[in-house]
Figure 1: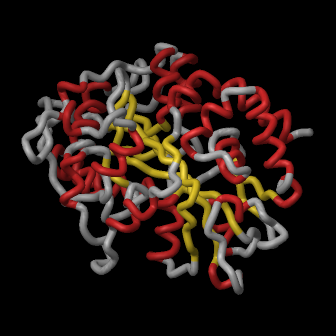
Figure 2: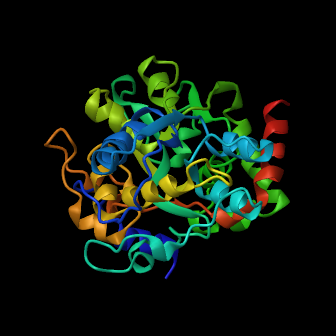
Length: 366
């Protein structure tokens, strides 16, 4: 069964109640430094992981933000000056950093069993465990718009994002090859199931860049996850790509009139890794065991609309922390949101990231 189907069937909802089943080694009183992406996402981790972990163990968590934790991790390890114990990274970065020998191996058999008694290796959804990383969430890159500023027909497809005649205004895009190339191809009529087959060819890359050319003059580029909701709120863009949880947070907790378009969404994992030479490797592993337990992963969904990476967490997902918003339909993996979803090809980007980023940057500067 392909990952897309497994994601749809096993993670239709996501989130949890507090607690942890991990066993902890004695004497790890040294603080653990955790690097993540900031904003609403880090807040969800602080509430679901950091605070309960400190309460249970007495170990302090130092939280550090980065626009992309993989970059400083690589720099620190190569410089022999590692200050981070745990980092939250995207899947292709986890694979690449592991292959380059920049991460500590993680023994999946040491992770706690699921709340339903299943072994961790069976409980995590397919693809969520690698030699050096443990997934915590399933998230997606989507696009969104301010419903108060678009009258008449509303955008419903990825093609609409690229149609500045039908839907005038600026477009926000992450300053990165990843996701932009895939979305451009889907907007140009390539079915989600064929995107990576097309993108693996020179003609496919040219086709994606040509589609991006059609909106290049209207693009406002963003680099940090907190920027897209702000761009929408400030009226700087009519639509923007974004991480689904950031838009959910702005809409539900800040009452912004933002709407997500799920068509063409790109599903991805975020995973915890331990940099090679981490100053508190044992404490880092204790933290990962706690944070990726059934209950902790489900608890995070009370704070943001990302799906937990364990199957056993799904039944524990309920309401948002406002006590009224059902989180199931807000998840990228909800059945209604999976109609034309693309699962990020981690292997493709691990192999082609440097090459395509160079091509994208050359296009950007042309």
